Amino acid sequence: MENYIELFISEFEQYIKQLNHHLLVLERNPRASESVSEVFRIFHTIKGMAQTMGYDTLSNLSHRTEDLLSGSKKTGEVKAYVTDLLFVIVDVLAQFAEALRTKHVLPQVDDLLEAIEKVQRGESFHLCKGGVRTERVPEVRIKMQKLDTLFNLTNELTISRSRLAALSQDIDDERLSNLGEAIARMISSLQDEVMKLRMLPLSGVFEFFPRWFRDETKRMNKDVEFVIVGANIEVDRSIIDQLKEPLMHLIRNALDHGIAETKGKARDRIEMYAVRERDRILISVADNGKGIDIEEVKQKAVKQGIVSKEEVEHYSDYDVYRLLTHPEFSTRDAVSTMSGRGMGLDIVVKTAERLGGRLLITSKLGVGTCFTLDLPLSMAIVRAMVVHINGQRFALPLTYVKETMYVDSTIIKRVYHRELLPLRDEILPLVRLSERLGCGNLPGRKSLVVIEHAGKRRGFIADSIVDEEEIVVKQLDSLLESSLYSGCSIYADGQPILILDPRGFV
Image 1: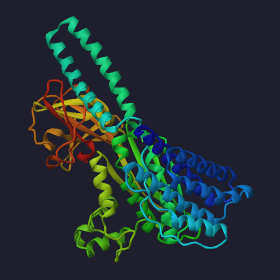
Image 2 (image 1 turned 180 degrees about the horizontal axis):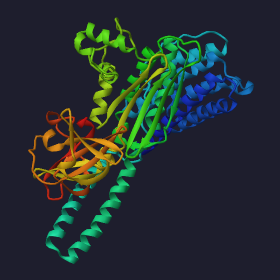
Image 3 (image 1 turned 180 degrees about the vertical axis):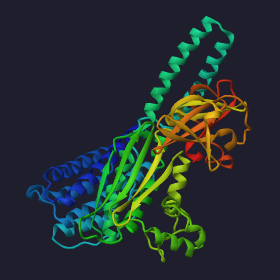
């Protein structure tokens, strides 16, 4: 019976998502006949499912909702007050789903049934909605704990594969080498399949926001268009699970600060869109509101004691935007139910950093603002270049590496305490990893790794390049966290190796 209940809940939650989608369509176009028919069909299906499972209260509510919709189905139009009531009914359905999943008491619907009768008689209704609407990321039909265990075991096999390859080279036995290569291929195939199981489309979290956004704009009495693009891009489940809260903060921020007042020229608009760039995902929340006033932010920061007046005068636009993420900063003099405590963007930044990413901010006064989460597609396995620095090994993710070469110290130029290298038609700023990492400097010819991030190129100087490896990323302990490192791994010889984060060497 437990298996049937799980299947019922899973299908029930999918129908709730479909209802929210069609009701949003009907709110914009009450004569959308296809959505009218779909809403009626879905409630009819839920009624049949609930009767089969013995959930009489849910079956009765669905049946009465069918009666409510029968007139709309005939006329092909749903009145606005009927749509409002349907939104409330769908909220209660979501509470049913949550109660069934958590094995709690099912909600009571007497007041809701009375409201349906009033609407059918042409009377007005008043309801106080209770509970919390929940949306869940679509699940693979397997317990996630088991999938996580399988994933961790695969990662350990990947580490063992590298150690076996190193061992076969040391022993120099053809039979061992052939066996090692065969095992390596099987582990790689297994790793790919497990990674595919963990990848889920962003729609799993994006689908929550249209309905939530509609409720927020109604409560704030604002007319704002909401657009979603790129919801079909697939991302590791471990990242999707943590996206809802930061995206909610960014959208609230856009509603409360970006769209603070009607512009009058065109309809206010907020877009949430995702773009894939190699092995990273960029998720942006952009508005066409008033933009960020640099001078106002400076004044607020000084007034709130976050920065001195003398110091802020030398800030670039980038530095000023970073002030917005300070936990004590707020542009509001008073706290509202939406914002004003200065914690929202700080939470977004901390979540992005925990996921191995960062928050990017761009704005133009009078045009709008865009907040972008720059995140990895997966936090588990990366291809990396291993470099030697004074006898120590470090890994550089290959996605940042553009090219490598040997470099002689005689062609390196020094300008205002900065080392530069003429490279074809550009002047390349250099970073001596030995100095930045405190490893000590060795004499002799060096290897140069050209790194590119956010359109900027730099040259990382190391003693030598060891190899390219596929490494399993382990998170650093919070006491060891640094902007210079994105994690650590286990090398083929069983020794730990730190993974450098090129973004921290700016």
